[in-house]
Length: 112
Image 1 (spheres, rainbow, N blue to C red):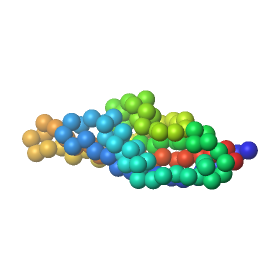
Image 2: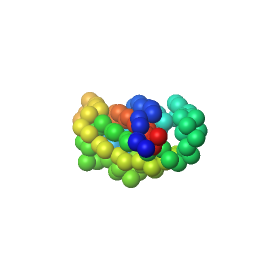
Image 3: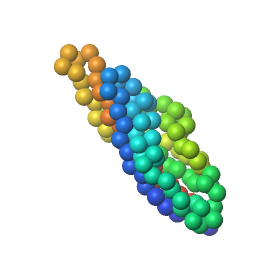
């Protein structure tokens, strides 16, 4: 059998005042996942934990994202997290803080 792409879920998350890149990334993945209910595993006779999820995160400073924390968001299956430069950081007028926007994509695959 071969791993086949079954779904791509896309989301956006923010940390409005704390400039916490991990928090924004976690929220982006939750946004992607919590708007959907995937039934593809059941539809093809596979357990939901057989899903393999590739999580892609985009933030301005990729090194500031804790990948293990992001991975904890997945409710089923196994996954990997890759973080790329992207997203957005908006500094306040005083330059003392910022809002971080993260983008997430969750690519779901099954061995069928």
